[in-house]
Image (tube, helix red, strand yellow):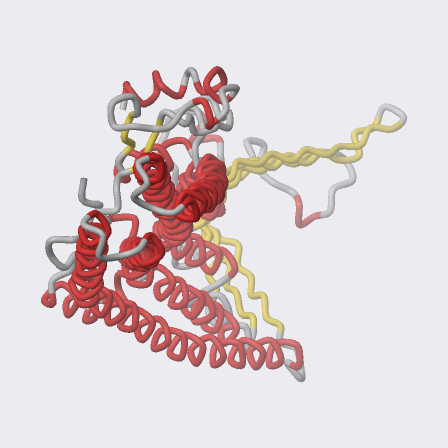
Amino acid sequence: MKKFWSLLSVIVAFSEVGFAQFEPSSDSAYVMPLQDFIGLVLKHHPVANQAALIPQEGKARRLMAKGSFDPVAFYFASGKEFNNKNYYSYQDGGLEFFTYPGIKFNATWSTTGGDFLNPESNMPIGGLLAIGADIPVLRGLLTDQRRLALQQANLFNRYSAYMQRRVLNDLLFEAIADYWMWSLRFAEFQMRDRFVKVARQRFELVKTAFLNGDVPAVDTLEAFILIQSREIAAEQARAQLNDARLKLSNHLWSPSGEPLELSWLVIPQFLNAPTQFPVSFDSIIKISNEFYQINPESQLLDYQVRLLEAERAFRKNELLPKLNIKYNFLTEQVGFLAGEEIFISPRNYKFGIDFSIPLFLRRERAALRINEIRLTEARLQRENRRIALQRRMQQEAYLLENQFEQMNMVRNNMKNFFELLRIEQRKFQIGESSLFLVNAREVQAIDAELQYLQLLHRYQTSIASFFRAAGILYDYTPPQ
């Protein structure tokens, strides 16, 4: 990894050198394995950094919702003085405690004074201490706006990890697909360049044979045309490689957040034939059985349902009448200030009842109905989408298995075409074939190798596609 970063530090200098001046080789280039590339994407890509903020937002939302239950300290004072007369003065201060069951406890100290007080506001000289509670009996007993907000925040915090995984799965799939396309274009260019060298060697041999009178002049022209066609194909492959390199550079960022351009000195992990199937049958069965629990998109569908279920309980509770009972014990403050025990008598209290109910409940019934419709839609969407997601994962597994089985057939087919080319070249050397037939066999061999490389590319991309469909691409460790 350190070697790679030291190489990227000179990217700007090497980007000024044209590719025609440098052809990557195993001696001068640094191979960047897929696993190292994935590590760089997860560490420095802006989308990955953005995804890392999702769990932090979940914790912040939960903290904000819990803040609704924080104790509240308050103080209120009011007074009136006119023409040297103290009309009235009021002071109230205390604490309120909000509990999760919906009961609000309070402790209040109040003093009053003045010549024109309402008789009910008269208090002892030291004031009164009130300790009591506000208890919802019907509406707000089982749930209220505070508890609903906390439930929703807890759900968001719980499912934020799945939100992060979904973003990272999509990001990694795009990055891995671009990586294997880069690897394919690199392999295609290497193949084209190899056949350019073969065509040049053949031209020199044919030219020598012509000068010796062994072949007609038309064979030299044909050999030269073959060089030109091979060079044109190599230039096209070079352009495609450059496009793939630049596209892959979109996923590379420096630790300071600066976009990087991949150097020509960095080459991809080669498209090697797999030695074994990447996922065992038992693993596929296990993934299929646990699909709903591990797939982030499935879990986020469940998240939408749970949000609406929490809201439904709140909407049902809103249909109940509002009935709150308020009760406070009263005691004089003088003894408390003097350090004596506070004497609370059941005869000294303040009591109240708060009751109200809309006569038609149209707003509450409509809100509940809308919630039930949305909840039904969310449940149907969850079930339908979950089945579609699982079927897609199974399709990807079948496609991966099919491509794995094709691998040997296509590789053997390619070997056979190269064997025919070798035989045709041998016949040409002893005068039993023509340059035209050799070129025809070579075209067939090139097409067979291209087909094999493209199959390898599709296979490697399908591995990422399978793990993405399963929702666990973030946990996938590619082979070196």
